[in-house]
Image (cartoon, rainbow, N blue to C red; front, side, top):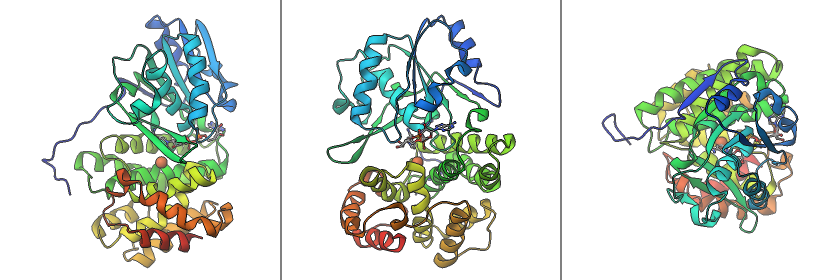
Length: 377
Ligand SMILES: NC(=O)c1ccc[n+]([C@@H]2O[C@H](COP(=O)([O-])OP(=O)(O)OC[C@H]3O[C@@H](n4cnc5c(N)ncnc54)[C@H](O)[C@@H]3O)[C@@H](O)[C@H]2O)c1
Ligand SMILES: [Fe+2]
C-alpha cells in the first residue's frame, strides 16, 4: 500500500464552474478568449439543447454520440472535427460524449492515429485546440480526467487513452442539466460514481490525498442517490450527485479503478450493457470479495453509505446488494440478457484487464472471477 509520503501527481481542469445555472457561463468564457469556431460533441438528446451553453460564433454540432462508443463512432467524430477546424472543442453529454471530445481535441488534424495513442502518455502535444467539458450525467467524472475510453469492435476490448493533453481547460458542471436523466440511468450512473470512489479508496495504489475525495463521494451518493432517483428535479440531490461524480473523477486520475470495473467491462463490450448498469451489478460482489483484504476501509465505506453495521463478507454483500436493488437496478446477469454460455469468455476478457485487476487489494484469479459471474447470473 501507498503511504502519506508516497509521491503522487494531481491534475485538474484549469477552471471548474459548479452549480445550478452555470451552463451558460461556458459561452462567456469562450467569448472572452475569442474562440470563434466551436465544435460541440454530443448525443442526440443534448444536441437539441445546445443553446443552454450560450456559445457564440460558428457552431458545428455533432449530435450522434452513442452510449459506449466504439472506434467507428470515433471515426465519424474525427471526420466532422477535421472539417470543422474548430478553435474550441466542447464535450456536452455523458462520459461517452466527453471521451470522444477528448480524443477529437487531440486527434483531429494530427498525424497520430488512435492505435498510436492507446495507453499512457502516447499523445504528442501541444494540443492545438481548447477543450471544455460539460457533463449531463452524474457518473463518470470524465470532465475532470485525462482518460478516454472507446471500444474496439474487433476485439470487444475497451481501448484506454491516457494523456495530460486531454485535460479540459474548463469543466462546467451544472446539476440542472442532469434533471432529465431517467431514474434508471440516474441510479446506475450514481453507483458508477460511487464505484470510482470505492475502488480508488481500496486500491493498491490508494493515496491519502485522494481518500478524502473518495470518502466524501461515497457519502454524497449514500445521502442523495435515492432522493434523485425518486425525484429527478430535486436540485440539492442532483447537485450532490454531480459533486460525487466529480470527486470520483478526481479519484480516477492518479489512482484509478480496480476489480469492479475490470469485471464490469465485458458486460459492456460483449453485451452492450451501459457502463453504469454493469458496474452497479458487479459492485456488491467485488466489495464483499475484497472485504478480508481491506477490513477497516470496508467499514468506513459502509459507514459512509449509512450502513455502519456490515462487517463480514456476507453482510457487506447483502447490504450493498440491497442498496443497489432498492434503487431499482437489475442485479442479475440473466436479467440483462447475458447468456450463461458466455461466462467463460467474459472471465477471460476480465482476467486480461491487468491495468485494473493489478490494482485490486485482493488477487482475483480466473476461478474467483468465474465464481462472481456465476453468483451474479
Ligand atoms: N473517461 C473516464 O474517465 C470515464 C470514466 C467512466 C466511464 N467512462 C465512459 O463513459 C461512458 C458512459 O458514460 P455515461 O454513463 O455518462 O453515459 P452516456 O454518456 O453513454 O449516456 C447514457 C445515455 O443517457 C443519455 N443522456 C445523457 N445525458 C442526459 C440527460 N441529461 N437527460 C437525458 N438523457 C441523457 C444519453 O443520450 C445516452 O443515451 C462509457 O463509454 C464509459 O466507458 C469514462
Ligand atoms: Fe466507471
